[in-house]
Image 1 (cartoon, rainbow over the protein chains, first blue to last red):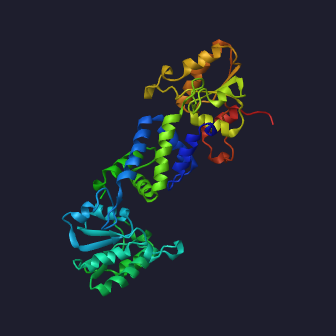
Image 2: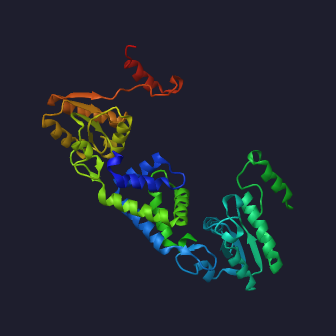
Length: 197
Length: 197
């Protein structure tokens, strides 16, 4: 039947490109959308609007609809920059409500295996921001993965000569977890980083 | 951050309306689309095309881009009609390659609990097709659920007085399953429907 509806085949193909969505889910989503033409229309419209309006902030490279973004222009503490890999990571930090400085989105992490070199990231732009002289601390919040750690070490080496304080997020046991089931490497980090009670 | 990108919030909201997609997945999909503007554009375009071109066949009510659909106008055996609940069910039957007749999509199943009565389905249109006199057999392929069974029994009662043969799909052990793990009701059906070897 689908071969008689090429637009439907195309929609299924487009949905399949999304992460975590296979053939069956794509079909289910497509039929669901067909059953509710209103949702279908507003999803299409939302996609077009996002495409037209969302861009990267020219200062911190976070996704935004105003350039520079409200965090860069607002009343945030501009003497601290938190460096993250992606806008999603920045969103997670914002949700925590624990940080009130500015951000810098690298748009990725160093990963020679995937052909991502330091030059492919927004590192040059970060260094330029720091050279302007108002930044006192850079909090590195790259992911705690091989790529993230590599990026963190690379950044630290680039940043320290600029006379800025370089810190990074603590590593340890996550909230709500049973130590029995935490992986040994995390326990090691937690032990190394233990503090006075 | 999202509060500064209302179009992104809207896209996440639209994605969340899809079945099986929660807040986190919607966010992940939205960011994924933002990273590949080409995919974003073609998904939006595919949605618009589907909305413009896909309709229900005026004969069998399957989703199609030509009316009547290629199955209704093609060289299929029009003396047999297979009655299904949805276009997806029809697609599953087509995939099996076991049926070469025509179809009738009810667009749902009788479910008083959900306010779906026989009048809400395409039953009147099915009866009209049969009254034209060329149909010899109606294969009922509604789902094997309370709603599907109710619909099957209702249809059988409506169809038999019209002098047409009414059959339904066999119920039993599905292919590849270990009898140990098949639910008792299915085993009962399989036992009742056993055949000579």
